[in-house]
Amino acid sequence: MNTATKNKTEHPAVKTTSPADTAPAAVAIPLSERLAFTLQEAALLCGISYVSVWRLVKRGKIKTCGALRHKLVSRAELEKFLTTTQGAA
Image 1 (cartoon, rainbow, N blue to C red):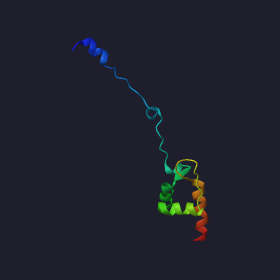
Image 2: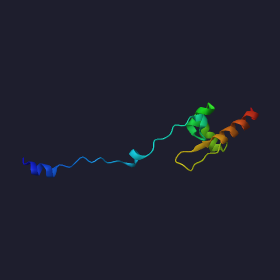
Image 3: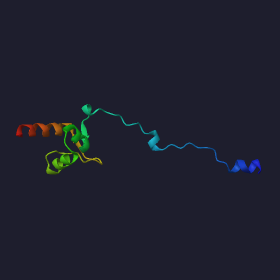
Image 4: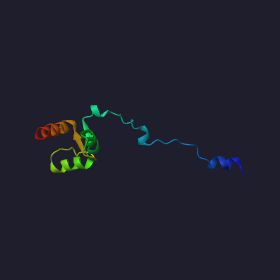
């Protein structure tokens, strides 16, 4: 094979980058410093099951922020719920 035709068909290696490659890495913040939690994290912090937290949200006992893809429960909302239910027990 002729080297002139071989060079014409070869393509130089091009490194492509995607937005995921250039995006900053997520910062891991300890649960003790977070302002909001997923339902799973809220259940873990309260020591109850995910289903129990989900039921509390459905009953209106815990308010969530649904602006994002997943519902988030604020730290203040969890503290408010736990202090109001503590007096009832």
